Image (cartoon, rainbow, N blue to C red; front, side, top):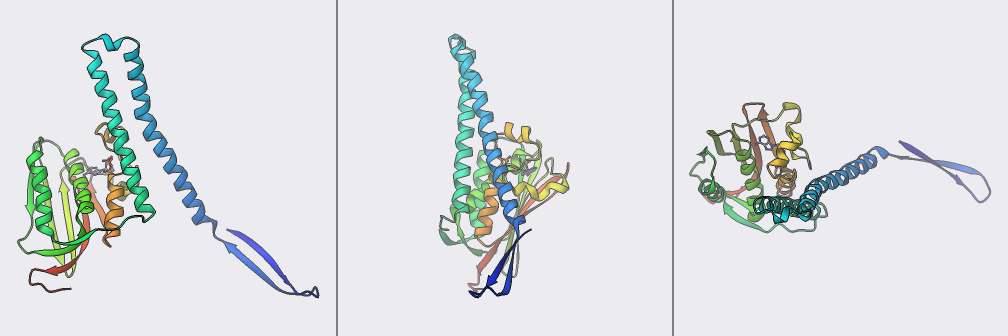
Length: 265
Ligand code: ADP
């Protein structure tokens, strides 16, 4: 806390007042610290793939390019790292757009279960892993006013994580519950879980429970931070419940605009 005093003085020289201005620096300091931390994180996240690429390119230049077996592998590594950097930069651009509120939500009214089912179908068709999907969705139509591209991105992200952290033979459950005019979406897995004390930090930028492991799976550490921004832009909230070794459930809410009887809430 910083205090500034100003003396109010008349032309005659008489002091007839004193103004004390209290500045709360703690909020500004927190913002500054977060910004510094963010820049440090971005630099670190970019340096890692760049260092890897640099050493592989050096090895190629030193003669590995002549080796029919090694050369393609090394080139593949540099390609993977380049793709990771592209993902990272795209995620950063998206966050920065959301921070500056320089975007519009392209809202349209959709039947949520139908929309959700289509996304799950896409994952079910392309999954290579041994996980079983369970849909716990009712037949009732609930209409929500959403930016479908953004919501698709949110759900894609949550499902990809559920799959990434699922053991072989695991179950992934999809649920939707409606109470009054609030729709809650649940996506749960039987994966490794997240330590209780950190469970809601997974929505922070660059937070990862296990940095090396998450990175080796190709993640940027920004997926859930973007998801949170998007859900909040829709007026909803997002949170997680998890038990280590048991699994994780991600929840988010959306406002229901209309149910199937066409009643507007
Ligand atoms: P990442 O790109 O690392 O997946 P996210 O923002 O999507 O970034 O997630 C942040 C971190 O939250 C992950 O690195 C992981 O540690 C943790 N996490 C997210 N979803 C799950 C899940 N379903 N099970 C266990 N841990 C998870």
